[in-house]
Image (tube, rainbow over all chains, first blue to last red; front, top):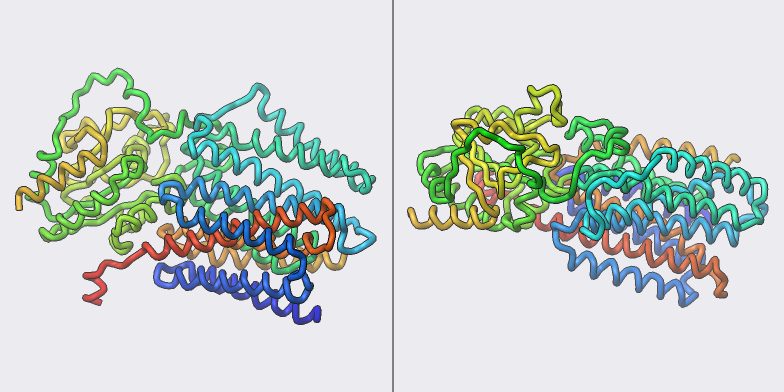
Length: 462
Length: 99
């Protein structure tokens, strides 16, 4: 019977891999997710059947309670809240691994417990717990329960170092005296504090990197549990998630031109608002202010518009009316495209989901590299609730915190329109020289109010 | 030790497959990829089921049951929200007709 179990786990692992492959294309992504669902169902059912675990009532209760909570959360969550949800779920994955590992410590499956099981058990407890507390902090920051600004303790890095040394020392003590439960508990305690001190110094604007990294950890935690139990489906599924999270982490860092080290230990950023905080710092230059009506009139004469949405758009809940505007422009024969910067939104790919929810078809959403050459042939670049990702200082100003960050080339368009709440600088605190350019129109106001005004004017003209 | 070596083999190869597959996922789908990963990391439920499998209420059993609940939140919640999101991604009707 052990063979049946192993082969079924192999089948599940293969289906996870095929599912992930299908997730790589918009056309097949839904099918890919379903493959992964089937893989999970197979893995769960074979475990229930073969191991005869279908019996005890507590198992059914645990599954139903967890399933219900998950199902309700999935149905209710707003798309703007996806980063928080993913952060929280990363944490749940972590705590599940810690619980399984500690349970395994209390009641080992195979006796005597070998050294390699003990080592992987320490790893599993450590990674799982760090993932849990780190994710809870990330969740609290994203949800606004905690301030998004970096919190740096005195001798912060020394505290982290001491905690890591502590984990290693407790681990060594545990291996020498496996029967003393104090050691694994101390490992958990040190890991819990480390998870907190690891994430609190990271600013709200860097949360996309942190969520991606914790996503990776939650996978590694599952893998570590797989090592403890010598269960290959856990190892494989966990490794896939670990790799996925790591790639996304890397991509986010590249999109900000920062090293992972700088993100984790640089304590950059002030808060997690939409990047409008803080005035531009006594600017003497004047900007030209326009109204939504002025903007609508410009649209009479243009043939192509590229819309650059930022998180300010989502905060103002302006996606739906923006789509309406896009439709109106398209109906006039104007070529409308959306340019999505990799760090637009609060997690990788977030802006795409927000626009998809507003029924913007995905084939008018363009990645930065695919659209950057088109700005020079475009009449209007309309920037809504974004700033740093279109700041030309990133190209030229060597002392700018933005320097080197890849940006959208909106300044090459014939007319640049900014819809912003204020003159404020972005997260990076770097003033945007483009505001003062002759071809720039500044339309101040809440994104939703301005775009609604635009739509109204466009309709009146018809 | 032998099983550890096998585990390391399996893990390493799976990481390579993961890198190979995920690198090809376009940024358009990165959020569903992450919520889908949430669901997949819920695979820990398999370990939790084994840990909770006892006809007693020892601490190890209780921890196992808690782990089942947490992992199932990930499994059900992760897959459902990913499906919900992917259902929102639509191609432009006009280009569809034209194609």
